[in-house]
Image (cartoon, rainbow, N blue to C red; front, top):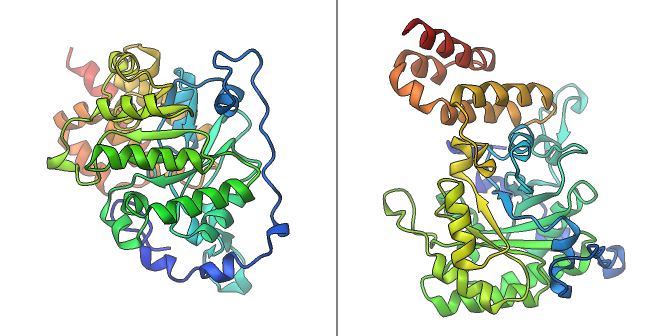
Amino acid sequence: PNMDRNGDLDPTEASKSPSVRDTFSKKDDEYPEKKGEKKGTDPPNKSSHYDFYNSIGCPKYVVAPMVNQSELPFRMMCRKYNADLAYTPMIHAGLCLRYKGSRSGGGRGRVPFIDSVFATCAEDQPLVAQFCANTPGAFVAGAKMVEGRCQAIDLNLGCPQGIAKRGHYGAFLLEDTRLIREMVTTACLHLKTPVTCKIRILPKEEDTLALARTIQECGAQILAVHGRTRDMLQEKLGECDWDIIKKVKQQLKIPIFANGGIENFEDCKRCMAHTGVDGVMVSEALLENPALFSGKTIDNLDLADEYIEFFHKYKHDPVGGFAAKGHLYKLLYKDLCYYTDLRNNMNKANIEYLLTVPGIIRKRRVSLF
């Protein structure tokens, strides 16, 4: 499928997917009814709304879904440093019934789309697979392809990028309460795997709270709330609103994750104390410091070397090679600001060269003393 410069899927590809009617014309009895999840043993919160959360270990430190960045090697590195739960990069549900690769040679080399974007392993648990969708049928069809390989299925209602606007998914569904209700309810009914949601806040507080209540009523097991609106991007980023997240937490009975406004481990603790949430979900700050949840200060070169070890160990992840450049840029940012020749070389380099850059920087550091 075509991708934009940010690595997101081109929405025109979605139009080639089976229609809602084609995807979701099956009789109800073709989908198994949702089964109850196992209850945690002596959980800290005895409410039935916490059964799923307790069953996955009551996670507090969560790796956010990040396009081409929360792939398996990076997730496993974050888990080493105290991440309790991780989300996959967003998967385009509308493309999951398609194949990727050339039709030449009798179709050899073609793989199901899901196998080109999703990988996990036995140690990669608990795991939430995130999907974007704008029809109940596509959401369920995509989710069914990863059932049994993750602990929950998440509906992306938070992506604010232009690609999401053109494809009509993510944060551009927030005002469509009817559609959200239909997608979440249908998924909860027809999936054996628990369903969760991630949203951005709406401009009006009462609308955010009403939407959160609707998602809970439809059966979502966890709600992650990013405390910014979809218009708060780049130069308009602005402060993350922890106060509205606190109000969501106070009004809902299901576990709530706070997302946004986290730069270090102290921020994690401040956010949880301020909002009362059950967990903090971090994205950008983790890319710069995968050890953030440990509270440790580790040299960025050591982190880069360690990331490369995880990259080699989990090389079966189809997203890994695509993600490596972005991870190394983030981890080596300060050094690359000084060694601009390396930064320029990385822009046009293959993966083999990229993996040597931390070693080159290390040698140059030594020569300075």
